[in-house]
Length: 406
Ligand code: AIR
Image 1 (cartoon, helix red, strand yellow):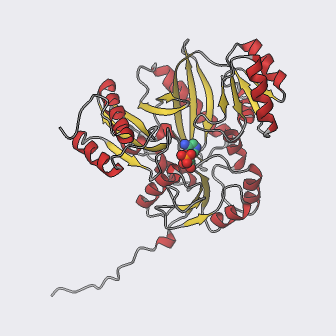
Image 2 (cartoon, rainbow, N blue to C red):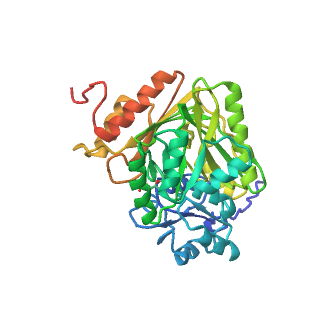
């Protein structure tokens, strides 16, 4: 005789899963939400507008500004961790939240080194990590003297708030420097001067670290910059000497530990013509140089960031192909007549292996509106496909003259 055992099914209780709150509703938050879904979670987002990329997709949105403490409190309440899609939150607000018991990840004492470019340089100099020569600029004469000593043009940077080429200038002369510095200081922008380094290329070393102290790096990638912002990422960086790659990963791991980072961190590096590695900038959030890993690594940066801030064990970062190339879809000077939907249709017809990520953003010149990942064996072939695909998506033009309607 068969006995029937009655089993009471347990329904999935989303409230038993942790809530991560992210300040900022851009594409980085949108793709973090995408990873959160797979983990049975919903990312709570503090967005300025309901149409922001992450606000379009999360069901847990707080509308407000990242510099309003009341809005930050509202998004933080009841969350297991509060984390970031950009670096622009005032440090004093974060300290107030920590004092109220909020788990800010990365903690403000670490995040400040990604927010304040001068504090970062002072700290790295103290740790003996190679960086380009720099100085604080409190009056025009400081910058002119720096140009005279280190060569023209040099790089003038806003200490806080800049990204994607914003807040960066390269003055060529003393007169230009004086005008620029006077104008920026009058606007209340703190400045630093940095030597312009003779580069072979730019690299990025990404690492994730959990509060428990577990850390994992991805292979070092090459980042190709155009108009002051990232256009293409090649993973792993082609022809990088094994010792240099290992040294960059070790540097990222050590820095993450020294600074007390929680979550992911990108260490943007210059490879000099002599093969030396210098740190350019730090970002303590998902970063453009890690987008390749969404399709090209066992664990991508967005899932890893969530695992790290929640103190879950970290995921395997191994690449899934000999090479992955990520090409940004950057808004064309003029948005094409052809709809995004039709462009996507044609892209898929021509390049079935291309993995496309669209951010739900309006098309504006050079704005990051999506990216394409292509995996393969040969760097030149894969790079050409990824760049051609991204150019097609933004311009509705095939760079090799191919006509979809012929
Ligand atoms: N971001 C943050 N720092 C650098 C970048 N690229 C991402 C974040 C932010 C978004 O870019 O996700 O919310 C802002 O993009 P935009 O195009 O509105 O300036």
